[in-house]
Image 1 (tube, rainbow, N blue to C red):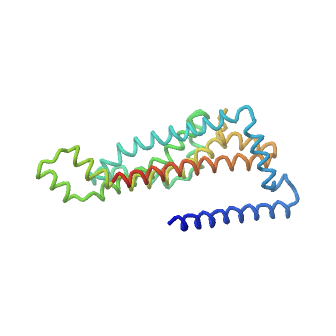
Image 2: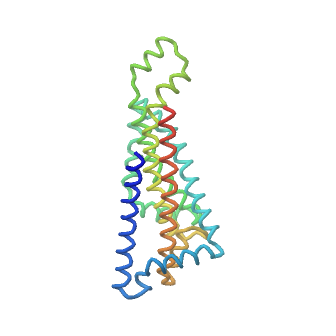
Image 3: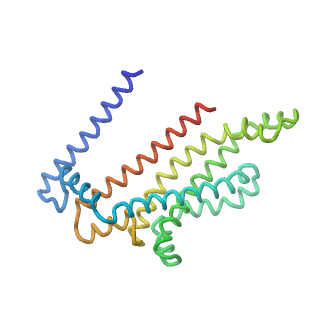
Length: 250
């Protein structure tokens, strides 16, 4: 098993080296750091970004917006998804809303949010609209996946409702919920940054990206992109480890 894990890591490392090589070749072929900066130039730019006065404020506020959007989305998804999974009529009632939100282009939502809300509220609003339907649909599927015969048996033998929820509903819901959270965070994180780019709040990764674009600081723009990717990977890792811990608990 250890040999297999080591081999997989080596293959992943080789893939990263390949991407860096392609990046370096593209930089050489363009012959301009203003168009495609080299990996080493981007690394230097990352150091400069870390040293900027507003770096930690932008980073912390963007992460805070993501967490706020996620918490609100999760709460709304549980409040509406569980009843929708248990009651077909309620599902038919909220399904048009879910379909509409999922089908509307993110850029349209952002532009409308800029008109309706202040610039500071747009990223969180977009995060909610992006993550809510994804988590809700997974909650609904998780509830529908519950073995109704086990629930009926528990009710016949007068098992406590708390035990039914813990031993029947939760084990069925958790895999769907963690999958929905993972997908929602992926979509939501990108939507937050896009919202920041367009709405231009005072602080935010998207705001810093837009500023770098305006001043043609391509290496800095890529540096912020690398930072955003790293944060996204961190959150996905946390979700995966949490899911593994839950699986062991089950």
